[in-house]
Length: 250
Image (cartoon, rainbow, N blue to C red; front, side):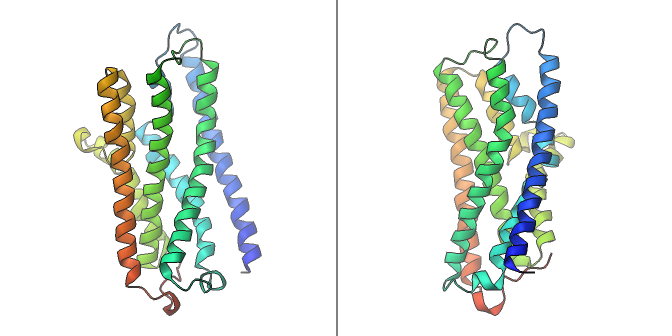
């Protein structure tokens, strides 16, 4: 398949995935609006929690995101990767594309949430510093969460030379907190989406404790991302770009 055909196919696929994502969130938005219709006051964390349940991330948001990442396979095409003299340069380009795809995905993910905040502005207390920090950190954590899952997908697909194995492993990591919660291991369900849920709960704490915890949550995902990149670079150092190590099977 020519590069132009691959690009066109990926573009159509991305559009369909984004429509599915937006449709799901619009459905959540409608259900939430019906539920809070007669409430006079509304907590900000409650609103965000409606869109951020662990089961939603595990069974819907993360799988859709992984399908989006299939678009990065265009960099595995021989006509593309042969222009790179260093495999690390090829990997850096993949990470850049990953972050760009994540930003687009997060923008669509965030749209119904932002609209919900605006529509319910009179019921919410949005003028204080705590609320502003909460909203900013929330989307930063979501961004880092998807980047972490994305790096796991990219490096495992590369290592095992099969995309479906990369999908399965990254899906398992993204769903781990949901699986642990099913078996009542709530104290251990804090790797990805469980950490996000824990962050949302922290909004109820006093300001000082809330601010302190933000450094922990953000720091956790940043360190997780850095560690994965370090491991990825170590694996890549042992690979030969022109030997065919990055030719993947679907």
